[in-house]
Length: 115
Image (cartoon, rainbow, N blue to C red; front, side, top):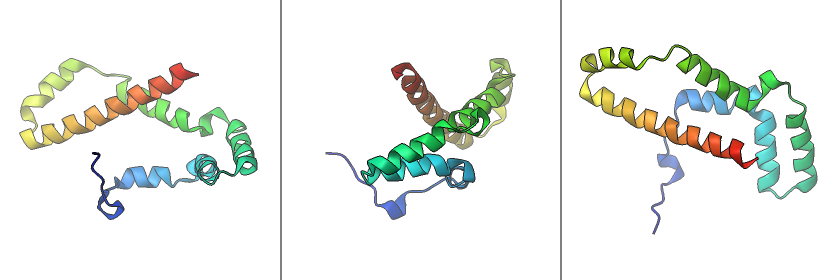
């Protein structure tokens, strides 16, 4: 049996909320809303809006840009220098966050390989 979490107990990262409700996400949210409401005509129109977005306005562009920025100068030796000076609790929190991001990256790759 799967555990359920009441909506009021779900904590949302403030930055994630800001990004999810940004102007750039409106075309994508429009697609989701139309799909959930089984509005086929509205969904097709919303998909056309997404289709016509410039590359720099696309959701995936934001994700790719963030990844590029995060890993452009990645060096695991720098991490080795930092780790002894990071408190254990902070390291555990950082590890959980990295594991979540790795999971999300796998989902992104699966989506690209599916097409």
